Length: 338
Image 1 (cartoon, one colour):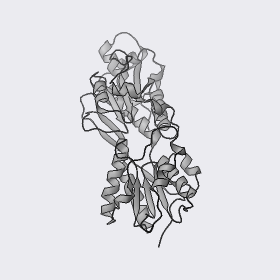
Image 2 (cartoon, rainbow, N blue to C red):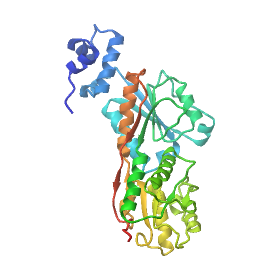
Image 3 (cartoon, one colour):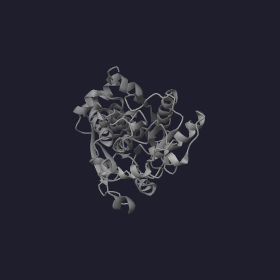
Image 4 (tube, rainbow, N blue to C red):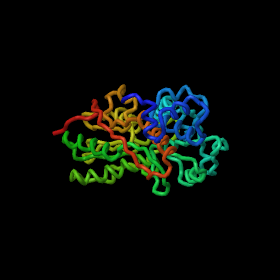
């Protein structure tokens, strides 16, 4: 990327290079309205010297569920992307956790006002009524890894549909015809998209779906999830109809599923192949190493900041629904069958 110059900023706004220079130096002779527009444009364009300016502080608040702050596999990477991008764009960042009671009671943090907050990034699934309360503040906001037909705003998501397609295609190319799915169709938006995509692409590959092996009632909440294999042990019955391959809605599900199979002396991948979703770090260290769909987690956070800056500067432009591409990471948890 070429270095942004004073002239580049002047050309975008339609003022002189000298006016831009004065505004960025905080000199007199430039109206407050023009100065703010120049500063905002410089930040949006990535003008590197903007970080030296103390007189224009843009405050960005992240809203997320409180368990996201202790989760170290997925959300920490998204939040790091947000932190990294706000720092590079000289934005002041704060993160506010929303507990279950606060979300249910629609309690917007008192620190979030138009006077104190310039933009909001909502990370993950919060209920529509809560988000509508955020919308009512009239503060620009962007939502990451969630979508609602009821909320008009900018969205940043991964290409869940294409990720499931790639996973199913890989199974199909390796001879698997009986493919199950594990997720939760009443939880996160991304989980719903992955399930709907599984149904759609199973049909496109002319593969039948056995409802007995579509498990949508798994509970992912709670810190003891990795220890809980009883859910799977109650479900698993190694009959001739049991699928040779399974797609899991995320890597955590896949890893506990594999652990359960192994504890029941069912070999992975010789008898059962498994593909996860998210590409969390521990998947590469598991045995067998987990084949998974990679999500650009840090890039989701970075893109959210870029989109928020765009929205703060161009509030009247059409909202955008942005999907970042995924890719299949092939490891050892899938075996070719005859």
